[in-house]
Image (cartoon, rainbow, N blue to C red; front, side, top):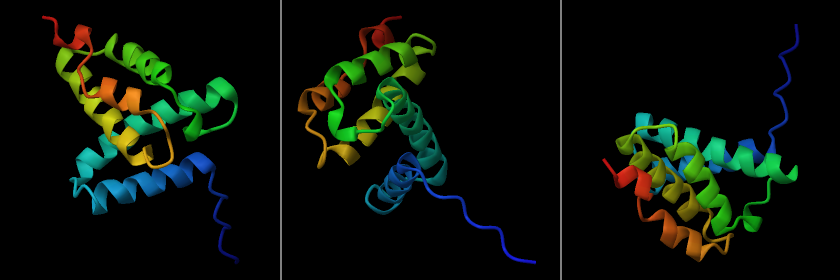
Length: 118
């Protein structure tokens, strides 16, 4: 019997693997936190890839961040919305050496108004 071939890794899978290692090695986050941050990153990056058909982190813009957070924060509690902002901020920091989205990073450091109300 031959061992099953490992499926080829997608660009998104490779990027998320690098992100996971960065969260563990550079940020020193706990496993549960890494899983939560990775889940948010996966949703965000999958939505970006679906919008254009190809995952291009360098093509991200502040409007992409804004749209994602509005969708996410519209369906969760204020506390969870604040967590989504922190989770997305982490992936944007990870991507920042290759992505020129300084405005998006600055915006993501603030909780959305819907998250702070109530």
